[in-house]
Every structure is written in structure tokens, then in C-alpha cells.
Length: 207
Ligand code: FES
Image (cartoon, rainbow, N blue to C red; front, top):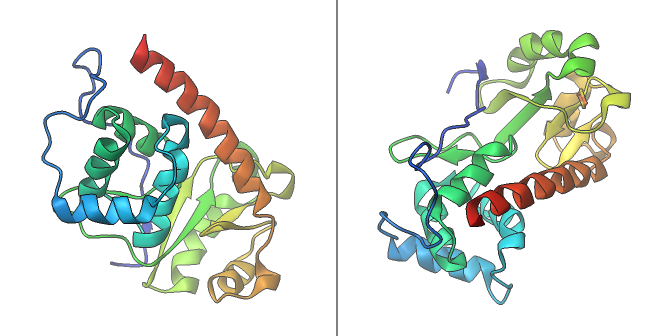
């Protein structure tokens, strides 16, 4: 993959526009291997729907992305509609959905917030400079507000945020330098925001 900026904001999902989603996985074969992997990863964790985002994070952290096979297996394991799992996954900019036939993303993804405050504080400059600074093994993508507007511009490297980001501090964070990244608690704020959104989505699926 080239070092260019990749657009990952996807909002489409299977079943969109086809009316009310069913409450059981439907219309997709669950691959036995993916089912085993998801079952092993979840272990003894409850399969409650309010834990969907946590379970998605487990898969993304383990495999570096969310494949169509793993999403179908997770939907079956949690007895959720596949459309609901996709809806939640594609709503959240920090998940990397890999559809059938697509190549998985590079191991490291750097997300540059381009919402209003970060935009005013230099997001575009970062988006232009980071691919050249970080090289082709690192994917640089745009992302919505991460909740750290008072420290703009903000960049996320994995689960760590870089506040007042510069190409140099982001490069240090990518290299694993703890001085170059901090404030992971902000991601928890976003997670809470997404949980609230998911609760609303779940409500829509069940009413
Ligand atoms: S606008 Fe970038 S973190 Fe809020």
C-alpha cells in the first residue's frame, strides 16, 4: 500500500434500506474457522449485546481488523442480526472493516482528527506530511473528533492519542516512545459516546 491517505469512513451495511432487521443471524454462512476463533477469543465473557463494542475491540486488537468472516461469526455467537453488527462497526471510525476480497490494512494505522478544532489547528498539514514522515508501512487516515479538542490537533496511534501532534511526536508514538503518546483515557470517552449511540441503534432494531 502506498503512503497516501486512505478514506475509511464507511457507512453502508448489509441490509440497509430493506426494512426492519431480523434478530437472528441470517443469510450468511458462518465459517467454522472464524467461529472457532471468535469463540476462543471471547472465552467465558458474556455474550450480552451491550458488550458488542468490547467484543469488536477484542477481535480488532487480535487480528488488526474486522473481517467479514469474523463479523458473521460474532453475530452468530452473540445471536445478533448481522446488519446490527455491521451498523455498529461501520459507525465507529476506529474499527477497520475488511470486506471479502479486500486486503487487510497495514499493522499500524494513524488516525488524524479532521473535525473542526483540529482542522483549525493544523489537521490538514498533518494529513499532508505524515505519510512521507511515517513511510508506506503505516496507514494514515482521517477520523472524526476524538474528544481531545482542547489538545488539538489530535492523532491516534492505535489506542494512544498524541495531543498537540506534530509529525515528529507522531513518529515517536509509532516507534513506541511513551513520551510521544498519552491520554488514552480520551478513547474511553469516545467509547462511551459510541456505547450511547449503539444503545439507540439497538433500540431501533428492537422496536
Ligand atoms: S476536534 Fe479533534 S479531538 Fe475534537
